Length: 544
Image: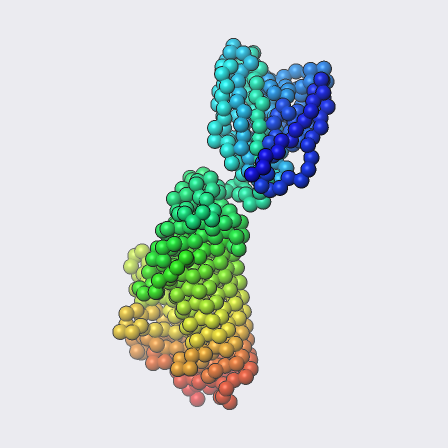
């Protein structure tokens, strides 16, 4: 790594200034030193000379005779290597970041005289205090905790000298140096980088402890957690509890889980979020018992959560799994190569939006809403998953269904593009697993609007229609378990069997299809209806 000084040659009066110029690469360290860069002009070499009252900063005036900046001939003042506070204002030397990057600050502070009651020295990043200490002697005091500080272009670093009581003998020597490394990939002021806690990109070592430490600190400080560009390894489950975990971009910030049995990133608490990064498994195991510890992202018992602009690549079970949560959005993600569902919402979750995602090459359904028979609320009452909107997603090449609702109510499936599913493209059903190892709750009030299905139900012996309503289970054979299902404005292309179907042994209520477009179906008959009260384009066609 190169080092360059912003150098200056000063004339005998200290007014002439010549700056070394040239192209500085992002890998270079540029040193800005107060005395070397001192100028009679505000802003030269990023330095300004100011007074402060609280967080209000104003410019001082340069005095040629004394070669210093002061407040109309009185305190406070700032010179090339010293500062003196006033009774009503602090003496401030300010450096303005020329670009995004990181800084390390060095340079000791000492009193010009041991007399007096001392001064209060501090370093502030904009309005945040990075370091502060009372200085009373002529022995040098070096600031701590001011290494590798992220800055944005325009960030102000303020070197502040404040009085303690009296301003007598408050002449203070301070000649700080800022070592600046330009880097586009730095966190904003509301974020803590995992690098600050020991994570190292691309070194092939575990960063689990560093990521957890960053999350804990961010939670305590009310900040976000930032994952810079690079690959960081995780050996166990990471829990994001009420904070935001975000990367520089979903292509460049990569969290790599190395334990195929325990690789989930869990979101819980109030307003947890994960954004702008890639989560990938180094290797996976068989789906097996479907344990949530093997998901890519697991949202559980969360409110107002966000999963946005994430690449999920590989998981031993589901890609994004939501249970027991309310008020969340799953948007703009790419989910691929999972062993179970791509996006799965269950456990009484509600007020969920699943929008503008790409889901492909997954081991089960691409997007699923499921209410199991043993899903219960805190009081033990049966609890369905409901109020879910599935909008404008691109899904393809799943090994089972495209978009499914298997138990639940008040679900909207709108404007999705569904391609090359092995089973039904859109599936509304109740089910009981083999030997009833699981059962699902009834389905009510589902609208399916303006979706396009292309080459659905490809499995030769799958027996599914492109759009299928299936009564597979009922605890009471006399009770309707699927009702008020409305298909409007949907298109079926290149169907391998029937574009639409309603059947099954459990009792089905009202199902309607209207404004349906069918292109290239294999049979003259466009549907197969064997259950429910079904209307097709406004006419009841089953029972006849």
